[in-house]
Amino acid sequence: MNIIAIAIWALTALYVAFKVVRSIRVVPNRTELLVERLGGYDRTLGPGVHFLIPFLDKVPFEIDLKEEAIEVPPQDCFTKDNVRVEVDGVLYMRVTNSKLAAYGTVEYRFAIIQLAQTMVRSVIGKLDLDHTFEERDIINSHVVEALNEVSTTWGVLVSRYEVKNIVPPTSVREAMERQMGSERDRRALMARAEGEKQARINDADGKKQEMINRSQGEMQRRINEAEGKAEEILSIAKATADSLRVVAESIAMPGGREAVNLRLGGQLIGKMGALSSGQKVVLPADLTKVDDLIKGIGLELEDKSNSVPKPRSLVPSSAPQPVTVTVSRD
Image (cartoon, rainbow, N blue to C red):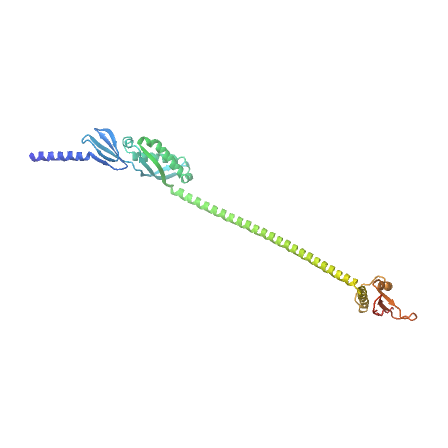
């Protein structure tokens, strides 16, 4: 009996010592402890060292205040056009009020997950299948807004919700793949047509620019030819004027007039002598007035004998040394 009593007292002492030691609690950072005294909520312990009353105080809940990611399991949802899809996601949340999180619901994590699944089904039911893939941001924002309206009563703040996968049935996926293939083919045809159109436009612009450059070159060539001809005419006119001026100066010199008359008379006689060779020669219309023509250029006919017709000599009037030219009259 003594051994049993000693064992009982030893166990009791150990239990009391354990309770005394457990009454000293060290709370880490971003963690809160809820203390109950005699079954009722007493206080919340923050980070640091705290002393409890043994056998009266106990800590039923230890709440982590750090943000945590909770995976929302996949669930079946029906879109607005009655297509069944499987949707899952990730929920990011943190506890803002330890007392509400502990006493507001039995398990706040489970409650948040169930509420998130319900809101996802509600949002997906308002969208068509095509929009469910395009409007993920809208789905996320609607779920977060709806969760925060309810979860504040549980002392929980949902910072964001992200849709991980939206999986349609196999038949729908195959139809969507065919649709995407046809859409890619259509875009390829449009891109090819646009490229051919742009190529034709570039070709037409190139031909247009070529014609413009060619016409401008032809215009410049004609301008250059016209300017060249004008320069040529001016040069010829200037040379002619210079030659006439030289001739005029020569005529004005002593004996210049007689030399000019002799030159002109020689050219006339030479042309008339070309008649015998059958060449074409331009002559005055009235050949009977040869004497007047010769006198007009400063030459005159002299008769060496008055009785017998003899060849006359053409002598320039007032020439210092007359030149005799025989002219036969048939």
